[in-house]
Image 1 (tube, rainbow over the protein chains, first blue to last red):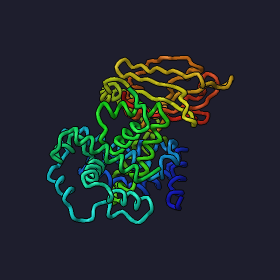
Image 2: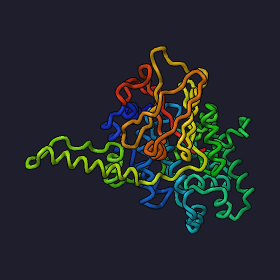
Image 3: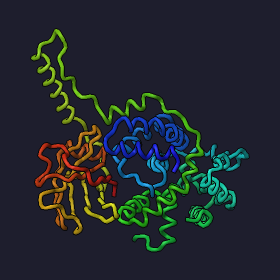
Length: 181
Length: 230
C-alpha cells in the first residue's frame, strides 16, 4: 500500500469514529477525483454537485464499512459516487447525447484508457482492452464512461437489443479472463 | 430466482459494476448481494479491476460552497447559548420558544420525502458476513420490522440498541433490538420516517440492559447498515 492510500485509510478510520477534521481532509484529498468523474458521467454541474454532496454524506455515515477487499479507499469512494451517478442518469428520461456517441466510437485521439499511466493494474486493464475485439471494447467503454443502458447502447450502435446484451456479456467475460483474479 | 452458478454470478456482478444491469434486475441483484458474501466479493473484484477507468478521468475541483453545504448538513451549528448585551434573558427565552414553534410547524408541514413503492430492507451482518438481523421498513404504514437471526445473543446485562443516523448527525434511538430469533415490529413517528427516508443509515450500539440511559449511544457502535429499496 502506498503512502497516499495509507493516509486515506487513516482518514477514513478516523472519520468512522466521528473525527470531523479527518473527514474534511478526506474530502479535500479526494473530492476533485470524484467531482471529475461525476461531471464526466452526468455532464451537468448541478447534478454532479448534488451527487457529490450525497456521496460524501453517505461516506461520513458509512466510513466504518470500508475494508481492504473493497480496493483502495479511492476505489471505494469512486464506486459509491459512480453508483449514485448511474442512479441520477437513470432518473433522467433522455440523457443520451447521441451526437457524442459517434465521437466516442470514432475518436482517433487517445481514449481514457490510453491515457492511463503505467501503473501495473492500469496497464493490465489497458492491455486487455486493447486486445479486445473493437465491438466489445466500445460497448464496455460506452457503458462505463457514458452510463449507457443496454437499450441505449442498442440504439447508439444500431443493433438489436439481444445482440447488444450478448456483446456486453461476452465482452466482459473475455475481459475477465484476460484480467485474471 | 437467485443466480446459482459461478459464471452467472460473474456476469451479473460485472454488469452491475459497469452499469448495464438496471431497473428491477439491478434492485434484485442489490438484494442478493446483501444476502451473499460471495456475490459481494465478485462485485468488489470488478470495482477494483475497473478502477483505472475512473482514475483515468480528469480531476476537477468542486466549488468551495459544496463543502460548506456538506458540512452544514452533517454538522449544523449548535444554537447560540449566550445572550448579547442589550437583551435580557427573557427576550432570548421568548425568541427561542418562537423559534421552537417555527421548527415544530416546519416538522408538521414538511411533506415526507418521496417514498419507495415497496419498502426498504437492511440486513445487518457480522464481520464474518453472518446475517444477524433483517430489517424491513414500510413508509406506507410507518412500520419497522426487526427479525433477529439465531446467532445474535447479547450478554445478560446488555442489549443491542438500534439508532437511526439522521442527516444532522444526531442519532435517533429507535428501539432495543430483539435477539435469538425473536421478531419485533415497531411503529415510527412522522419525524422518524422522514429521517429514515432521507438518511437510510442505521447503527447498532451495545448498551446497558433496557437501552441507553441518556438517549444517546453510550456503548460502542458495533454494526452499521444501510436500508435499500426492495
